[in-house]
Image (cartoon, rainbow, N blue to C red; front, side, top):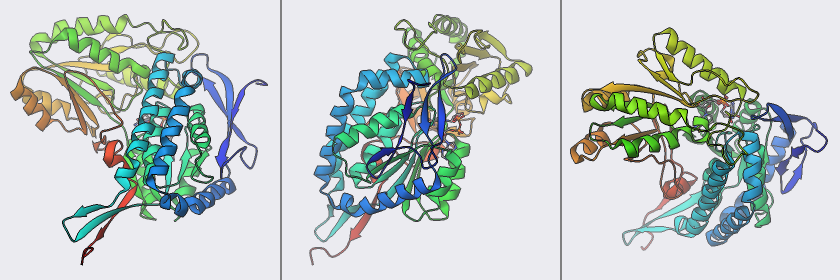
Length: 475
Ligand code: NAD
């Protein structure tokens, strides 16, 4: 461990260890070995972060939005110049391939740029007729909690709009993937973010969230993670009425209609599903196929899944790396075992690879009974179920038969079918004839148990603002 990296906290403009000197190990999921450590914050560290964020609040919110935007655009350039190093660090601690990590950083850079470029326009008062106007104002200190699956882009989607809106942030980065938060905050520091405006902590998640959300200094909670944890945090936030933006789990369907072009649909599903070893909240997890196409779809989809090259994430030939941690492997084992016990068939995959590292192969299940856990719990891994349907009404009913409502996808060329699916599917976002996730310029948020509030685009910035209505302005 002597040459191992050790990641620190960033409080009031200074990098430092936690007050107790305690650290947490960072594990490489491809080897299962500890290769770095991250500082763990104490309660006095959190109090210092709260105090420094609060001290910076007024000056940051009153600073011209154009200046704030320029700092974000400068940070985007600095981060872009560090991508090669940052992507290697991310790949080593998360398990995604270098290409995936590089792509993720490109999206983080784009998100910083978008919010920086639009900061002035989205902070400007807007007239409502001759006599009234709306004045957007920064809500105040933000507590941001980000997960380990897409740590770079998910930090960008929270911090960039909060900072553009004029809010200071206390970020709790994911302890399992600390480098993304550190590279991101370093870029902001180098770009000239004032002391206290961004604070970075790591530690025991439940302690940190409880302490930060019990403080009246914090005005906004933004979290990406599981529905279960999101609900716990929303309860904590209720005591101070902190505004919540909750981006929670998903269990996304793909409806492959009878006229779908399988040569398009199969690679699109395979690429999007198995990116980041399926650990994406909007990855498809349940495929519903029009019965006449079912047999052909299944054999071609299984073939596509079988031919994905699994291996070390830093090998350029690798198409899918390991899962991020041992908890995901255990979850895959539980879901497959439960489905098989209830009568499902494993078409491909289904067991952990017999080698070091958290490797789980692309897995396809068929004949899955409706009460199997895999049709209800978010798989968050490289497992797909495939089932036939007879009518569009039946497909919509099946597609909506989970508590989640984050994303849904479908393949058809027929306009009336498109309209039926757009109206019928319960999801925050749909993609037609391809699979797409979040982008910097558009709002994205779930319905049902997938959360509430929006990240991305104008709404992403509005999440961190109050809208002050001024009547009689011209009188
Ligand atoms: P988890 O729910 O314990 O943790 C998810 C994330 O939330 C982690 O980064 C964790 O550090 C953080 N977290 C946990 N408890 C917290 C708390 N009390 N306060 C603040 N942050 C807290 O589960 P996990 O095993 O790390 O991940 C597995 C599940 O999490 C998956 O099944 C998936 O549903 C969900 N998840 C979703 C996303 C997403 O993009 N929506 C991302 C990561 C994980």
